[in-house]
Image 1 (cartoon, rainbow, N blue to C red):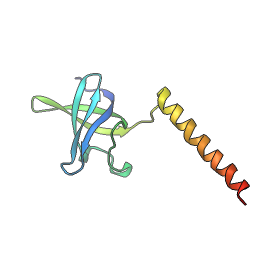
Image 2 (image 1 turned 90 degrees about the horizontal axis):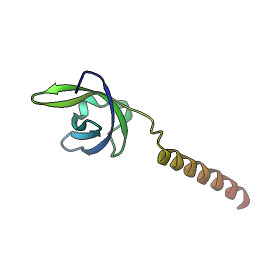
Image 3 (image 1 turned 30 degrees about the vertical axis):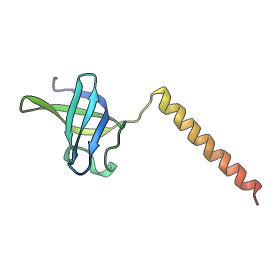
Image 4 (image 1 turned 90 degrees about the vertical axis):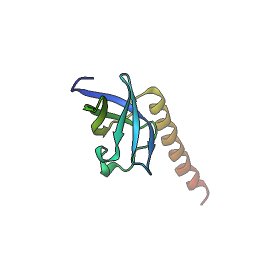
Length: 97
C-alpha cells in the first residue's frame, strides 16, 4: 500500500474494543475508532469510507478516515424507495383527516 487515498466499506466494528476492519480492493485493513470522525457517530457495517493507510508494525492501519456517499445502484434505489414511502405517507395522512 502506498501513501494515497483508498476507498472501502466497513466490514466489522466492535464498539467494546474500539476497533474494526475496512474491506478494500487492497484487502482488509485495521482501523481504530480514534481515527474515525467522531462527529459522524460510530461506524456501521457497510459504511463507505475513504482513508489513508500507514504502516503499523508489519501491517497497515487506516487513518484520516472519512465517510463518503454511497453512489452505487443499490444505494440509489434504496434512497428512491425511502423517498417514495415518505411521499406516500404524507399523501395518505391528508386522506385520513
